[in-house]
Length: 112
Image 1 (cartoon, rainbow, N blue to C red):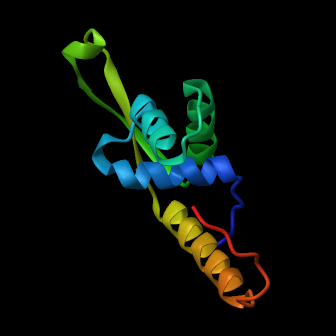
Image 2 (tube, rainbow, N blue to C red):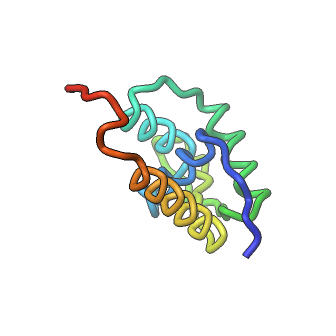
């Protein structure tokens, strides 16, 4: 499978789509990223990343049902595709391999 590289933000968006599963749409993704990272995220940045990920073949989207709270407008819902899953697993394996390669005495101690 061809490897498509992801930036940090694209990775966060893709992971968040997986976390939200059936409820992955722009506003929910934005709110979840902010909740998980403590970062302020613009909805337009999320939409741009979602579009890039869809163009790369990592996500698909579909229109959901119309909802009263959205004034009858439909949500665009996103789903992780096989390439997106493969990319996330590959990134995770690479990061784990790197972390496992760090000698315990190399990084200074810290407390949260």
